[in-house]
Length: 99
Image (cartoon, rainbow, N blue to C red; front, side, top):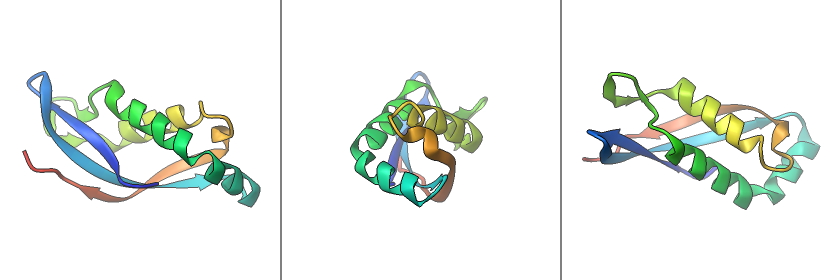
């Protein structure tokens, strides 16, 4: 997937954006072809998931909770038709935004 923009909440408001590059592992090649057709919907579902709730480690507004991010992304992607073929999400790059 393209870089995903993760809003980082500080003091109840937007503090900065972090950026995450994610690879989707799928069940098989046929599923990969189907998901390629659904990429716009997958991106939309991912974006909505990233804005649904803060994704920092509780008590540490500076650190992204990768497990929470992974589980929210998986849940959102699996709501897209064909998205149930996504087996896992691997983060390949994490860029911390400036305040």
